[in-house]
Amino acid sequence: MIRQKVYKTSLASLHPSLVASGNTENKDDSPILIKYRFSKGYRHKTLDTTLTKARVAGEARALIRCLRAGVNVPGVRMVDAAEGVLGIEWIDGKSVRRLLPGGAEEEDEGVDETLDDIEDVDHLQEFDISVGEYYQMMGLIGTEIAKMHLVDIIHGDLTTSNMMMRRTASGKPDLVLIDFGLSYQSSLVEDKAVDLYVLERAFASTHPDSEPMFQSVLDAYQTQTGKEWNAIKKRLDDGECTSSVQR
Amino acid sequence: MAGIILPTSFIMPGRLKKPTPLKNPERPYIALGLEGSANKLGAGVIKHSEDGTATVLSNVRHTYITPPGEGFQPRDTALHHREWALKVINDSLAKANCEVSRCSCRLIGPGMGAPLQSVALVARTLSLLYNKPLVGVNHCVGHIEMGREITGASNPVVLYVSGGNTQVIAYSRQCYRIFGETLDIAVGNCLDRFARVINLSNDPSPGYNIELEAKRGKRLVSLPYATKGMDISLSGILTSVEAYTIDKRFRSDGQPRDENDTDIITPADLCFSLQETVFAMLVEITERAMAHIGSKEVLIVGGVGCNERLQEMMGIMAQERNGQVFATDERFCIDNGIMIAQAGLLAFRMGQTTPLAKTSCTQRFRTDQVHVAWRA
Image (cartoon, rainbow over all chains, first blue to last red; front, side, top):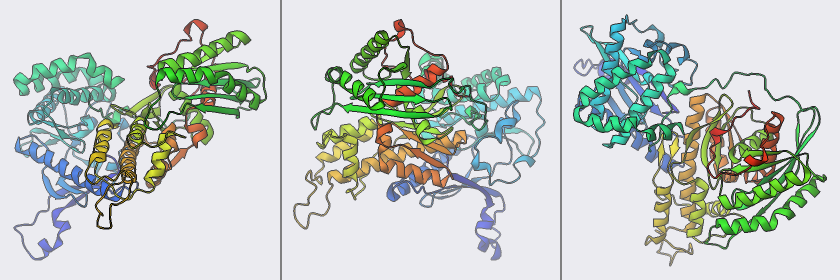
């Protein structure tokens, strides 16, 4: 989403009283990410409040639904819908866009204003990724998207920038889907196919060399979705999806 | 199909300054533009001088106005255009103080079929009579080029809002790409149809009367807010706002029945709510496109672009982003001949002409199908 800012902080620093009173039980130093949706001056006050509230709540709801279904997404830490604030788990990892060939160069050139306030973007731990692991990563992407679609959440903005790779404590690679600002609920095959199609386009344009790898994403997606796959595949192959996007 | 969010990877190198392929003309060019895609018939004469400047020599328009509660039918509109064509063109040429233009341009779409055909016929006749080249022009590109010429905006995100079109457009690699648009009806269509429901006059335009009415509105009624990424949907909003006119609280005369009758909805309130909701959606998708492209300029073109509330809202948004909004007044916002002349002349200077056999018109001609040869 646009015109929202992202900050890194922790619950403990937001509530110093918890630490000062020695209440160690509630003490939480783990970093969180605060997404703040600005109120927009151009919009009628009432309309703006209603919208912001609905959008923050919607994003939190989608995240929680994903969490319940075991999809790897950031955990929800705090929600203040009226103020437009959403606090979620800080994911310590690297954007898939940067890990794939061709993605890193352009990233800063864009308008990713949202990243302005995050420190240490470039100093995250390095990933040593072998060719085999690239395919593994594609598989993880497919699996996570499939798990999300199985509970009827449509991401709405699937790009490689909206996926993060991190290592679990055991050193296993872990893929996390982020930014549910445009997500919504739908059980329609059409919407799921569009979600995949948007990702395919993103792959083709951002990472021209890794396009064949997209097949691995679909393979993993197929394994995870099972019988629903056929309908989605049919829709995805259907020309109409393509033509209406390319317009 | 649902809205598509363009991934950030579609970002275009908008800030790169390349030399323009358009050379200054070696002699002055004069072009006559004819426009007739909807209920306006326009003729305008523009002059491009050797130093690269453009001068508007004349801009004449005649609008086919229907009684309140009625829209314009293609057949009647075509009839209107045929009746007025010679008068409008003669007027335009007289004002421009020139007899026959050096290059005659003409619109080929998109638009309503019958009115387009009648204007195309006039253009072909003129071209053959005076042996002048003919250039087909896309209506949307005409709007954009005129907006750029008048306001001096160099590479803006364009919000094109009219009775037939609602698009957010940005330029990339010799093509005006559509970033977002309406999934159903155009915003002008939405406003005009609502004006018909509450019986507002079509003179000078239903949209203008909605704007006046909305200024008196106080109460914001709740309407759907339908943005999908950079696309919007408007038909549901029209249905919802229409539904309020059969609400128990609706007072069609805008007056309370007695002093206890406070919980009322007036036509002015509905116009106000409709404008606030629909314009907020338009500004939001425009803002989204600006963020994607990294542009700080926004240009509003098309008939709805005259609306001062829309311009104001866009101004606030641009200000919040440290950007700038460019808008024109009704002379250039509303369909006119001069914009066709401008876009046509640009194309002509790049060597594009349309052979007579190809001077047909089409109702479906998307903005991004045009090769914008004159921009870097």
